[in-house]
Image (spheres, rainbow, N blue to C red):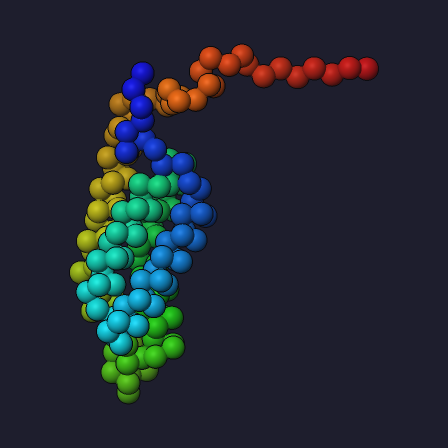
Length: 154
């Protein structure tokens, strides 16, 4: 058997992937705002990378969680920025709700690209998994190990 491909290697739980995506998004925001005093295209590019990385890293049982992650992640990040400093995503005079809507509109391109690529990666992973079945990795000893037994003594 050959080594697992990129499409077969995701093994992180959905919760862990979500936490890593949120932390990565916060780091992206911090770097972008520190460099440019605004949320720029750098954030959009990093957001796309985070979405693709989440889709590659998650285990198959948690595909749904990652399939809904990009819009919720962007909504959360833009809401945070709108509460902290509206001028980074909208005009200073806008309300928080208007700043969130403006921020989502300004970064819709990054959201669309990240969402589309994440869904594409999940689709490819599902097809590869269906083609290869649920085989056990060649790097695991589970295929040659005996079945577990339960022994009880009186």
